[in-house]
Image (cartoon, rainbow, N blue to C red; front, side, top):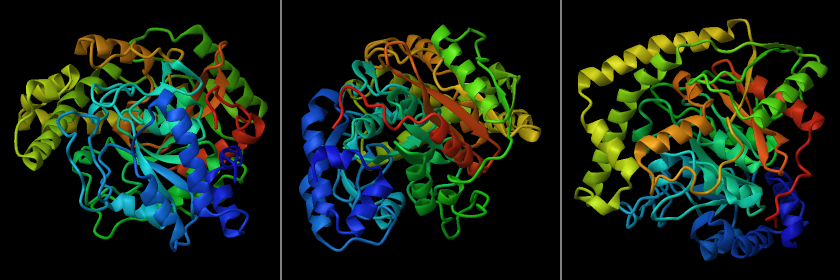
Length: 476
């Protein structure tokens, strides 16, 4: 199997070829390694490699999962893998090595994937760009001068460039959808607690963060969710059960959906004209497909929502850092955390218990307004980004003042956070491009726990506006 043959297949097709004896898991792993070794010096997507370990797994007996023998990468954030480092993109945690797999890592292995290594992430996943003092910037395979998004930018750059068909990603304020949009991929933020993250996920206590994957095809996203979404025994807040396999939904007609669309931003600032035009073309496409499409914003109180989110997020981050400090056995030195991380930690430590609980109370009430918008609507459509994909260094968490980082992020990534707060599933699809060929992601959000509708609509759009033949300049 040549690297080009390997990269032409999505995860399910590659696993099928391995089952049929058309290739082997070892040949697939070797092809993936060849692409990584050629492209990673430019992209900086893979920050820890375990190639010989992967070859040994490929030579052995593999589980009969849907992705049997498929090379895979894991984000270097909150995902323990036995014997591998877990730096979280931070100089403070650069010497940490996990002794055993986490619960979700074990689920991925049971799905049949072969982990090759870990992918780049910003420090503690805080920013929508993958640039850190420890790991350096991750670059976009469509144009290496531009960001790959964050905080799952390493995974997105790896999948978009053909290194692997799919890779682990996580999303707390947009960290699956933003890199998927930047790199021209399918990126689903699943419903809160749809993919269990216990017993490892202490930092996920507030409910904003979810785990899933970035992929090049809709069906790979659906199949991996089917493989990882089984509720854990004794899970305190399991997501509502699905009616059937998500993979089956991809080929089904979505019917006539009630879709609202808007470029409404929390700041009131308009989005870039190219983004606005792409959004309007997407709305027109949906009308031509027979859906009931109207322009209508959420109309929620964004200022109150974001203000309510602050204390609970700050306290949750400080609590997670307290666990890490206990594990390492000391406080971080001044040069071991970036300015934005220091600001988040110091701010979180000032939040009182009363402030944190009031924050949760306010969020609970304000999220009702977001959720109630979907009583009469099936889908809400927005862009993922408010601007074209930014240049590397434009949102620089290492060199810029924290307030300026926040301002620039607010302009570039205005649409994703409300659905982390409400827990709804939200999906980025690579439907458009800018004049200079950079991807533009469109975001589709559904009712709570209704991934099925998203997969049906995504399957329809993948047929009507296919993106599979588009290739970045850095490709296998």
